[in-house]
Length: 576
Image (cartoon, rainbow, N blue to C red):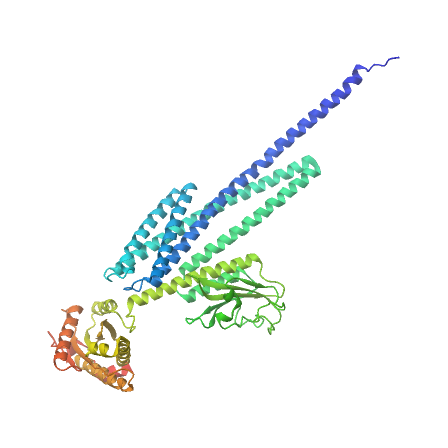
């Protein structure tokens, strides 16, 4: 007997298959919709992160440009500002290399800014860069040993152009940081939104989907922590740079570094040892421990850069424990017991100027993030110190004569202008070493330089602190004595001659004498005219036999009446 399938029995599996397919299709649709809902914020996060990464890449190039700009400015201050002089071939090649690198970075940064929609910043940077390049070209004649005339204006223009370009790059960095922070913040918002969506999908799609959602959430939190750490690092760097740019002296720089280290690596003893001018000894310039803290760990006992392993090797050294066989000898057998340490060499322009030393509990060395903070802070401090020292050197060279250390002619003019503005009368003594050319030709220029320095010392020991002593050129000197009568000024010059003769009895320098011309200031005469009258009196002293003081005839009221009854005994008391 043949059997047949009932119509209902045949259609039931078909309906079940259709139901299964429909459920599967619905599930696929739900998954697809859910996936779309979940992926959308994640895609937005990715977009924002990629944008932030692009801005960060531009920030890196801007930072490189600023570093290149600072390196070239430092080169100018160290090698070119002390003109007149001719650069050595190697120094000239180095300067050309630094200038080329700065110009290339400026063009690269400009292109990156335009490609990231910051055309205004690109235009501003291009304008300041063009102005700066023009001023560098203007320094060429002086760097090549040209005449000194115009050097002051050329260097002032270069310094102004440098400041403008530095400010433009700083403004660009701030804007990039702001754009990056905004994108990261939007990314964080979308991360939170994506996390909520993922959790909702996980509850609908069962444990497997929940597990996947948790994994995605953990990854998102990890990215968020990384970005948060990066934001904190950028904020720290920006604050440190801003504080350092406001520090005008070395003590201020070290104070900024101490505050930065206390914030960046709390709970650790950190100090910076800086080499002296001879680079033979360290001095402790910064420490994060209070002097009154009896429990503060001992600092590093190294006394010389040549004895510091980090300085010798030229890179950061990490010592997890001082009990290890390879630990630094200055960590072993400390009175405070075993410890961990990190030693970071502090360098600028290729020269090591110190070391940053951080110590902590044994087997608990600083982590990479802390080391990064200390390395960056040390580098920025070194750059600021180098800039301050270069500016101080340049300013001192601009104010004083390099051989004697006396005021140069331009500085004397400025100081006398202050006296004239305040209505203070003064005497001008114009001195010239007798037969100095013969001394130079007979004994050599080194002996001549020794004679000039000896005479400088005699003059400084013979005048008051308020008197102005200047090397006016060659073997010529000008002394300005405020509120001094002709008689008192003449007595001072006679004392200079007597002390010079006494100083020459040591025999270190061949004997020589000095002649002086003396003139009094007048309300109707300029400083140049007063100096000219003193020069005429000096000529009469030379004609009269040298080694003497001649006083110019006063053109009006007697100079002694113009002064406030200055007496020789009071002048002598002020000198001693």
